Image (cartoon, rainbow, N blue to C red; front, side, top):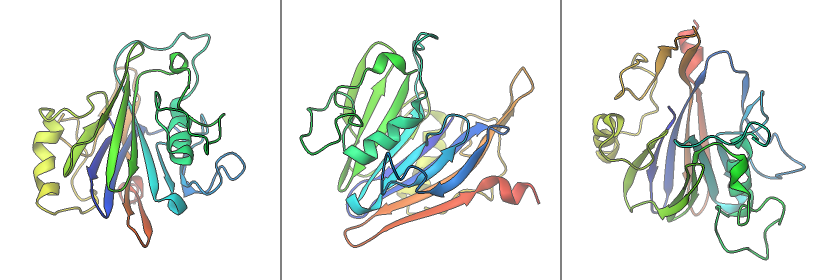
Length: 232
């Protein structure tokens, strides 16, 4: 149930809250893919090798990945979605875009075969705007993110009626962009920080928060390990 808040314009600001199973290994942000995606930084999922939020500081560009809803990919051909944000940040492409002559053809998402991926939402942020690609397993949509401050929610996309959006978006629009962490995680659908136990005993929880600012003169990436405070 990841969440990303987007403020368009200059600077463009993203606040991403990552929710994942507590026992899934990961490491904090860095340039973990220097050969394949030079200059791109992000946290790394140690199970599949990809990321949920990729930033290309030199290009003033960022890409964020959230789970979608729909038909899953066939077991025999399914691959991790963790490369999607990396490819978008590295090449400035979303699925369905016209091919870019200056983009790495192998990394570009312009002509990517989406049938190998489970449903997803993929945000590409390039100031002053951002675009959101949605794949439900059968159909691709690409839409501009409305100007201003908006919230994108895992499996729901840009749904202004989602309980989490209704409960939390007003404070961001009022200028309160503090990284979450003080409030207790909850299984309530409106909670920005998540924690609940699945029927098989696994714990899904908010693991980290990342605030990225893309400005004309600099790029900032503020990372908060939300598990550090809880584990003390």
